[in-house]
Image (cartoon, rainbow over all chains, first blue to last red; front, side, top):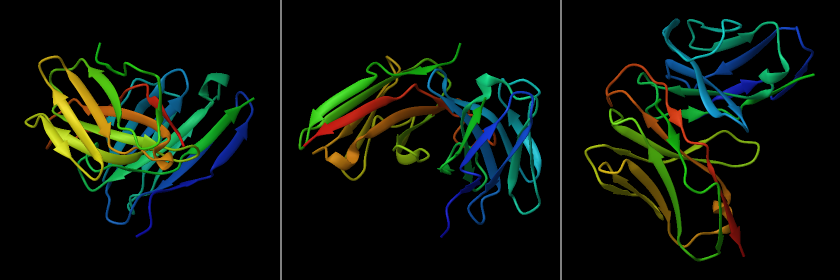
Length: 113
Length: 116
């Protein structure tokens, strides 16, 4: 079966711009979580969505937001980009228990210049 | 605060040797732990997991050991192969195994390098 698909794979944006990343979970998976990965901070939890509702949120500023659609696909948005937002953004999906049976996508590499 | 860390940031082993990657966790409420492997350009890949009511769990060439007394987790890879070269992360789920929330707390990672 198809894995978790994230688009785009690479993105270069300018400070102050906004960006939207997309994640298509494995078919049948209703929980989608987002993580930010940087060399300095490692993998950090952003938020988790289940049935179009945000169930849990990490410690990130309000510039980071997300949503989930009825087909479980999810998007995350970062507004007013800062240089420090440069990172690999990973999406993970699971059936219903987030954190259990996660399958990760390959990520979107965002570079802010 | 809550954290999951790794004792060794890099590990270099000879092909065929056994590898041991260690991890310390601080949240005594965590009852589910996972090891992930991440290769360059890819997302983390599930290797093996263990619940807190277990001390040991074995998979194919991998074994995870959990010592709740000292809050320590280890991943053992038998007969390490060049294809095992990657960064390995431990992660903990601080909620109950059947919990509906999921914010895995990841360690910083250990880079495993296998010399042929």
